[in-house]
Image 1 (tube, rainbow, N blue to C red):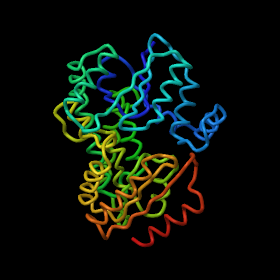
Image 2 (cartoon, rainbow, N blue to C red):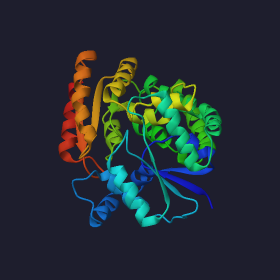
Image 3 (cartoon, rainbow, N blue to C red):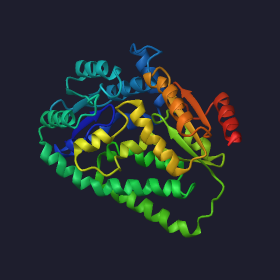
Length: 338
């Protein structure tokens, strides 16, 4: 039976592979399923307050419906650098399932030395070494470069890759669907098909949109695509792919912006916004999440660096299969201003 390492947000997946575990990003399991709404409601029936984040409720319900092998499965929560609710979720999972759990913390100061220490602690927990993990990181570097190529095709040829396709490939790289070799083969095939279409591609005039914020719980990408606009920059999803060059795991996971300060994160995002010559920005915020406040910082930084760029902030609470009328009207009005 495969050993599984379940986690609440991106962790050094190289360590997981080096230890012989199959990584499982619980977020991807939750949001890619057909029963997102039921899973959220189930958590509320189990005592989770309605005012808590839908993601943490979804993760709880996904875990509650999994079969566990106490000798092989482990649960990894990230608190420092992500969500403080993950600490309580880790306690609940430990109490309910009896499997081993681990808290991974990103160093607040982005210290390389602290990251080396944390990766070492993580490797020891899983029964492997930093050296083996670094070797696995080198093996995955080619795959990460292919993800960067996919991302380049997205913004150099708006509409050739839909915003949702870009989103799915990049967000799935948090665990490579548990099988990096198969993932790479499928990605190679997808890119090859895209490059074959390029000489005949003439989908001009599409508005180029940047999406900032956590991956959405509602079908934002598809809604834009249907209105002659393509999301060509998925900020956090791109960060999950770790496609920037890095010399070591410690460097890779300190360059990764999501767990650190919003100023550090948005400084990098604004570089991409300028390079991709975007027509507008959508900032998605999840209800009942502390990251809602980051909208204040983002708007101040954009006002300074990109004062003419239109910005729309949208918020969602629970999963929806389609954009509701109120939000649809706001997005359509935003597109008309571009």
